Length: 362
Image (cartoon, rainbow, N blue to C red; front, side):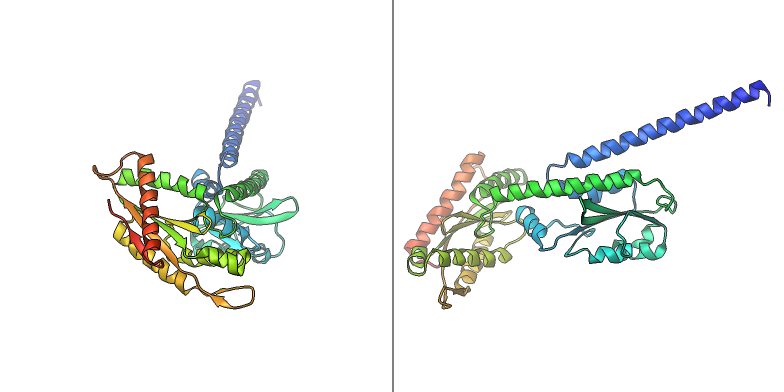
């Protein structure tokens, strides 16, 4: 080979090395940006959205699914009390590690595969979309907390000989993010949820009310509010004890919640008072909801410490607001109007016999 040919070969080799180095650097920068994207998630809700939706787009995947171990249902309860149900058909909570052992064939370790039998067991029987998969176990220390499954329509995308450092690192980052976000949600839960009844607390109610007033103003839709006061509650505490009174409050909150929509908010306002925020709800509909609540509360059977059944009733006041020139227009005035009108209506219900629903117009 002549010197000129050797030089050409060397130049081509050097060019290829430079191009490869540039490609690797760009790839590394994209991966670094992706890690930051997950680490910057400020809530569990945002993190799950980024894992299940954004990751699919950023990595050009056909499918993504996430399994999380939730042994006592604690995570689901925590998240539902803060956000309501997170509606993803590719998010699965499992009680223990056994379902993952079945997926991984007992040995839970990073798996890259093109086996159709494995692919067919994933993605809720939509596996024909994917031709290769990456199964990424999620560990915190020695404890497995879940598994992330990535599916590609490219048969060669995830093959057993592929370098897997990035995927292992991605699994570690996502595991840390999940644990951190859940810890943050637990702190948030303590500050926004009434620990006795599991309803939202007064602070959460006012935050939600401000948001819903702003939304109603933009959409020109009505918003309603219910105030519930348990009748003769002091008698329960005095005659049966405060622990029984607490039991009654828990039962009332537990039975009211299923009557509400996901967008509605039940909060303990204080003592024996509850409030229900009803977005996009006119007064007539709010009164119907209030009447259903009143009937349900009256039917609840509560046990005292001696095993005897007793019942309680509730007086409910309803108020409503919709964008109108004749009504308050600034957020603080709207908030005061809704609360004051509902409070007056509760007082009227108490004064006229209790165990009824009232509203005050104007």
